[in-house]
Amino acid sequence: MTGITPAFANNDAPAHISDLSGSNFRSGATVKLHKTGQTDLDATSVTVVSPARITCDLDITGAATGSWDVTVTNDDASHATLATPSTSSTRRRCWPA
Image (cartoon, rainbow, N blue to C red; front, side, top):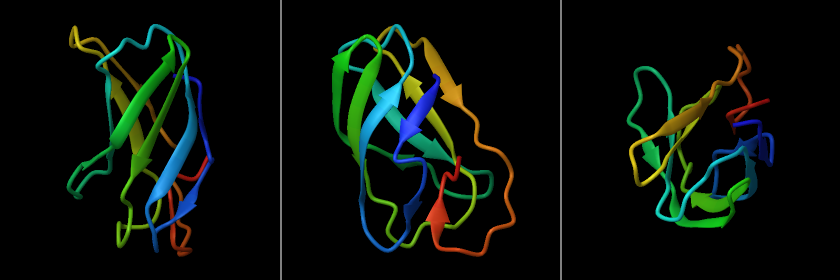
């Protein structure tokens, strides 16, 4: 995976991901956010627009702030993770780029 738009979101409402970019995305792919010590957040309304783009929604309301990894798993179990850099931000944001 190469990027996510928006690059961050506040955790006071669900977020719409308008462009999760990469390659080899397949119909039936799933998306989740992962942060050590937290429950994974599964995306809803996942749409594989093309092999290079996914859109989805993530309910990050009340999620822990800071960096979250984004993982896409295809229907054949292949997967890719966009690891986000560590941050000490106290803002109400998730997955800052």
